[in-house]
Length: 246
Image 1 (tube, rainbow, N blue to C red):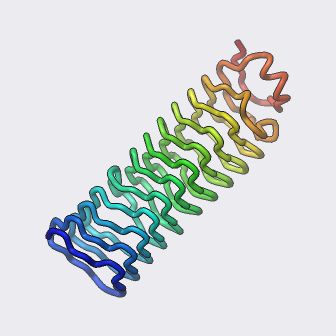
Image 2 (cartoon, rainbow, N blue to C red):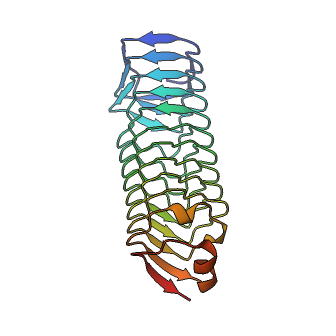
């Protein structure tokens, strides 16, 4: 199936079984509710500013699909490979992205509040100025990601990997970052106000530009490469932390 214009269509309580490979479908501003899309390969489908509510993609592959500006509600992408998709400025609410492959995906300025991203791979993802307030990212991998200005307020980041990522302007206030790995990150104006960093591993990071770190829980945290002057300047509550001072 080649180009098909389905812009602004309203589809509800329906099962769509498209031809095996459907390319260049245009669902811009379409409204899909309680809809199942089954046994299809969607290539470069445009969901720009569309509304997807309780949509299920069953035995379906998404390649290069564009959800920019879309509203996605109570929809599951669990275990999906979304590496070539885009969610720039999308609003995702109660969306299941557990175990999804989001490597290199654009989530810039998107809202993913309270979404589930457990064990998701966000390597090299771009989430600049996205809102992940209260999102569940336990065990996720955000290595080499561009996270500038992303809000993780109250998010569950336990056991996440943040290696070689740009955390400039990120807000980790009230986040649970227990046992997470923070390695070789850029932390300019990064806020850890009242974050839980217990048993976290922090290596090779310049903490001098961080905000609110003295209010964080650091029990059992491991710091490598922390200068004596930094310890004094930040007035951190180091009780229970393991510090490798250079």
